Length: 507
Image (cartoon, rainbow, N blue to C red; front, top):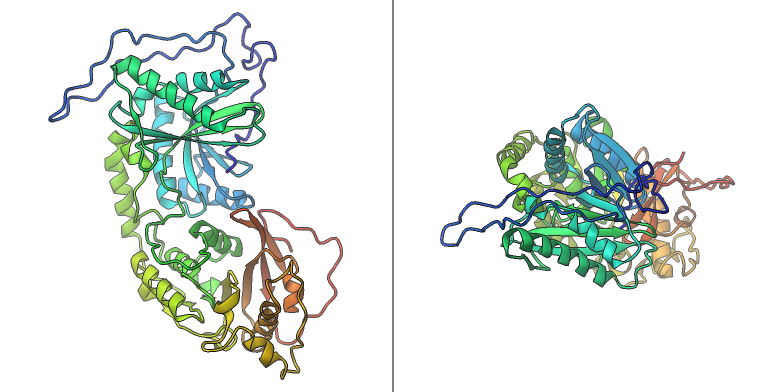
């Protein structure tokens, strides 16, 4: 997960500090005020030691930048995520795209540091609640140029951790790196943990414990070849975990990727967008996401977040409850129809139960049906699916080579041999040929969007894509192909110089 800041600071080669700082000027000290929670029932109060005065770290490698939020996402989704963040936050937030995510800062007109802090808290709560495309919402607390593990310790040591947790809470440190020269990432995580524990021990005489499963404070350290950045994870579990998925298939689609597919297609559940059909819905991720979008349901409404345990957010929890109540009040029935189904009874049952937990079961028409035989449900709409392979594309009660056997007696769709890099087997290639034939006969006027890692899928389907969008399904590079379905064959030569465009559709 790249968490690289959008701009690298210009650092002096001699001192390691940003250019323009005086060589004999010490690095910023971070005074620590006497903080600590009040007495708790049944427990002794935390006593603040008097010796936790301002600490000067000396001329360390420091590259401070203003506090900001970082929203991570798969490569290719950055532009879509930036547009979504602008819709959620309005025009006041300052949003910058970077590789693998976007950065959100307080509005430039906000000058007071305390006001900026409050503004970022509000942004973090709204983005966790409303964002469908982000994987996590991270709060940047410190960054610096580093050379060895001691610099990683100083990176975390310059933060006043008493502002975030008490010694009786727990923490966890995760590390991700890209071209880092450190030999052990685990040791880098240990240095961050030591810095947090040392800071709180000096202030209170106690240190927090580590909890790798359910921590109160989750930290993320990102390192490239020059700079290290430390984040507080305000989300906790990844945002694709909406709280409703319990039944899954063999390879479930992440909710954030399903939302990215819908966003790239421009489908927002408006009447002009048309109905939506997923003929191979699996666990129901795409139709459930579509139904929640059509009903204007906040994706984070049915789960909890890590920021609810953090000290900076405690005074703002009443506002958090108001945000959730406002999200509930704005929900409405969908204005378009949503259809879904699968050839496997088991998967249709999984999808139905997931939709029930997500609160949208009554808005999706599920039907166990063969994608090659499913009649068109309405005059116009959007087909969208992540195609499966193997038994889930077979007709109910048939063997795996059913489509191959049927195609031998079908003169209209000749059986083409598919290479191993394109499909898992010849039966899958036959399935897609017959699927395109079925669509051209019965779904004229519809638009189909297919996510596939096979760059030659349009040729195998004997269709010419009108757009393609680069997306990543985990580590797998895929294309989201758009096909405008018309009657007859589309065997036109493919133009030369057709290059993929990441993050935006290609005409």
